[in-house]
Amino acid sequence: MQILVSGRKGAPNNAHAARVPFDDVLRNSSVVFVACPRVRDTMRLISHTEFSLMPRHAILINVSRGGIVDERALIMALKARQIAGAATDVFLHEPAGPENSVLLGAGTEDLNLVVTPHSAWFTESTRLNFMACLQKNIVSWVKEIEYGDWSLQL
View 1 (cartoon, rainbow, N blue to C red):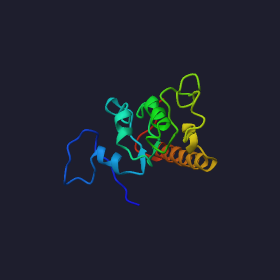
View 2 (cartoon, rainbow, N blue to C red):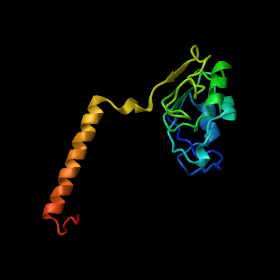
View 3 (tube, rainbow, N blue to C red):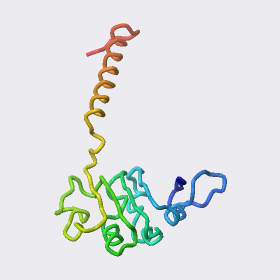
């Protein structure tokens, strides 16, 4: 597998950078994995134009934030078979339901679309590990207060 890391959308090509121009990544990828912050520049990062660049066999996976992938454009791309499939665990409006998300609305049942809650990372082992790290940090902090050069002012 060849992994391409995209440069910023619309940024000039830098021959010395390890990043590939955004449009080239879309044109040459079988799987497009979207993981970026939701800021003004990333809203609707993937929409009609971007879907038209992707090969018909491409699959889009969005684990970033809702609104980065244009949900209506995604549904249209899937219905038109512009792309082969998509998966997401984020929605423009959360909590998502058929009343506020086109991804869960009527007519999406037969699309090659997988949707899951954004809490998929929340397994029992992850939660236990998180609690152990939290406990360790609290104990370290209390020891620093008890034995450190400063005292806690309440």
